[in-house]
Length: 113
Length: 113
Image (cartoon, rainbow over all chains, first blue to last red; front, side):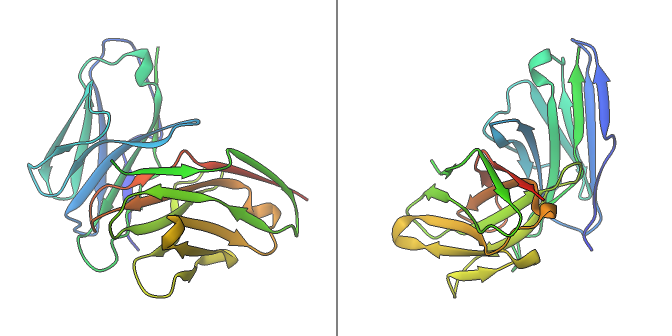
């Protein structure tokens, strides 16, 4: 089975801190994605990457950056955390092949105080 | 731009009732369609998917969905719900394999025993 893991299930940070959220997948997938999930808004795409060192902005990239130095790892960075970034962050991966399915990690619930 | 609309924000049913959750998308070309489910405290997982072929697709746990191209719809159905179906359900679409998904805002299903 595909496994997508995220470094933390729960995280509490202070306003202005730099925050790193890590995601690792073990299926050699080319594509990786970061979404945030908010009640009543569903999932919204922040950034995605289709190869090492490649990245594309999603719908809500402001206040975020990403890093993909290795194929299996995709990091989301909050340069200066703000309270409106309190949310559930979901990582996903997929292979550009026949199934097109995205596999999700368990999520990181980030609270910025 | 693509968008996905889920008709119901919160659905409350008794066990054994039939379920239909509406999903409409806006995109004129070929699409891949998905329903994901998130059980309380668990990560997002795939219920079923449609890429091509038979417009009636069957997924896990007795769920099915019907793709009606003329109506841009992909409604989720289950003839008889169980208490364990209590979860949040997300419809999603993408226009190209391996690219990011566009999610609806989700429907919360509450099933009483």
